[in-house]
Image (tube, rainbow, N blue to C red; front, top):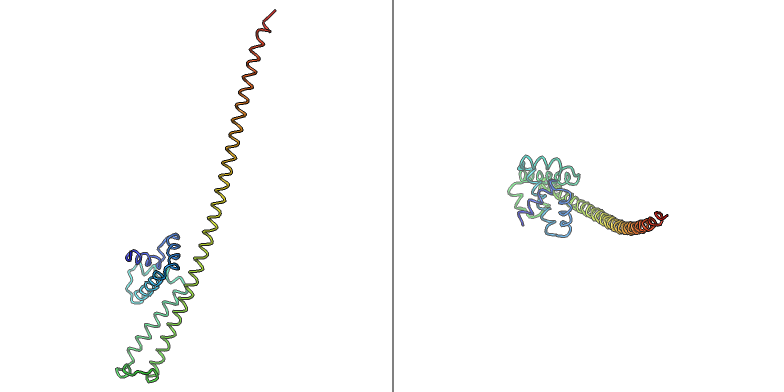
Length: 203
């Protein structure tokens, strides 16, 4: 199940699911906390692989055409890019003695600036996560509303069909009775005509 979930999540993030499959994933996303964090973790890994150039060509194209189509996701990728750059700059500029210092105030001003930038990036990513979660919840609620409307429409059509079927049955029964009555009358007329023939033949 874990491998199947991983594959499903990857297809979800790259926009390769049908609308029905996507709706099921988003419903599960809000009902299952563990599944939600699995998607978040997979999202981070996907972004990291993209920034490292480790994605396969097909996945890279899907990432750029679908994943990056969302402004929130683009901001998340840019935040991750900035964080990676800040960490790389810190590693390049910090000396061994700097790394052994325990208080932030004793760090070089450039390093303190980069740390502040990293904190800012993390805050932006957190804000994006909240925004994306609210957006997904709104989409789920909208999908639920549409589903309930469709169910009500189906029930209405079903009742109409049953009523029409019942009316059709009544009409068919009435037609059958009229046909029987007509046949009875025609039989009586035929009997009367037969009875009149001897009288007409008499002198």
